[in-house]
Amino acid sequence: MALPLLIVLIQLSSSQICRTLSLEGGGSLGAYEAGAIWGLVNISNPEDVMWNVVSGISAGSLNSLGVLQFPMGQEVAMSNNLINLWLSINGSSNVFKEWPGGYIQGLLFERGLLNTDPLVETLTADFKYGINRNVTIGSTNLDTGMFGNFNESVGGAIVDAVLCSASPPFFFPPRIFEGYTWADGGCIINQDVFSGIERCLQITNEDNVVVDMIFDFGGQPLPIETKFKTFEVFSRIRQIISYDETTWWAYNAAIAYPKAYFRYTIYPSEPMPGGLLPLNFTKANLESEIQLGINDTKKLAGIKIDSRNVIEDLYRENLRLLDFIFKKKYWIIELFLIDFHSKNYNIFYYF
Image (tube, rainbow, N blue to C red; front, side, top):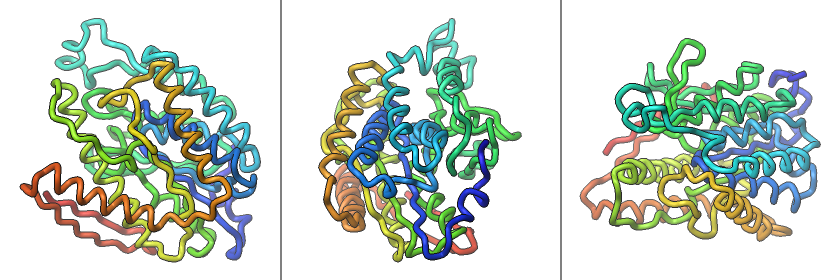
């Protein structure tokens, strides 16, 4: 039976460690995250990867659904289940399908270009063991324009919460949940490290919080492209925005929580396969991403890690890259107003 956060985590004292794992959004690139999780579990001491909280956006929420079903102490079984889930997706037919009237129907008469009934079936079938770990799923409320979170308190409806988070606008239809219309969490935040840390701070001190982050394309330098088709233009815009936001959130989280231990920041060491649009669910592509995640994580074996410098380097590189992409025609002004202890924060992004 699933336990609410305050029952699961209240066992920790102020002198004990709370570990949080944050997973980025990225469509089919989520297979890389599964490989990285498997790698971490298999190179680490068992206790070091007993994550108390997992937070996920979009594809990261799909992986969070796999993690939350296994209690702390069953990380090996959890990571194996994640790998098996991604390997069972043999093509897009397990994720989406065209409407009977094709793209024209999706574009003119439906709320999304593609029909995601197959994804509903896939996630429902995978949710076999219930909720056994604390989770935060981020999504975008299209009615209010605000970012929202769901946690394990929604019970079996957690599958609906994940579907909300994993519904990129235009391509996938938004979801109706708890009286609101929800879309992909990556519309606002693509790497929600803040929520996991804040949940740990409910039951322990900041210097007892250990933070792990897995990116699926936010760390790899954004490729320079010059030729696009219609769908690729839309995807490219979203890719640029997502890349910028992901590194920005990670960088500011490291600043906001100076006492927390930012341990692992894992990201692809080479360009990810599958093309510009991250909806390539072919078996060969997913196998390649999983293996890259495993290989990148194995490089960390036996190394004492503090990833604050890695996060800062990624952010600085992002600023240089954006300056190049926009050829100094656009200037980004960021105003960061935050009161973390009252959990009242706002981000203002101006272009």
